[in-house]
Image 1: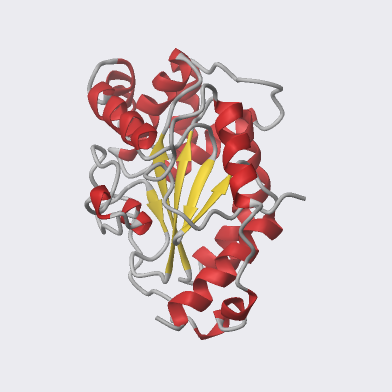
Image 2: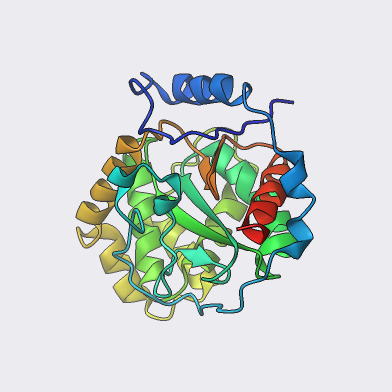
Length: 261
């Protein structure tokens, strides 16, 4: 099992972007295997103070990208930590933030959402220890962009997490890219509890979110994200749909670091 932990600034210190998603992930994994986890920090994980400021899923569907100036050289600025973030789940003051760069057309993203993320939500997010912030990175063709637009249309009505759940649940048994279309999105939105389905359809099919999705994608590329899914866990980078144990090891270390800050 490859433990992927990258303790350097992703993107800022990469000499060049990989020519494909697979090559980018492979490069990150090769670098990460040279960095060992800090076990001493993990021992203090239970001393971290849980966050208490949970949001209701409502917020600004135009939100994207970093919480601070990426030129600072601080990888943690990718974490927004904003109360009006409809793409986030968990306490805004949680000691550890996971910034996820994902694509609704990505089968590995679907695997993570269906296999690994539920345990992270139960063990850490619901307890106020971890916050997960979604970032659009639709790199798998036009269908991925359309799905990202639908996701933001759901976010506009406070139902992004529910929409995400329905979409990834529908794609978990599909081999390859699901290539969902607007009628699929309408079904997911209805199951997710989106109130105004006519408004959802309009925003999912027009250019309401085209520019912000392009900007979000460009931002991810600029900081060195080359494939999906990709995660910044605190100040560590995790590449790909890694097993739960990998995420737990990094989360425990980051909780310990937060406890000693």
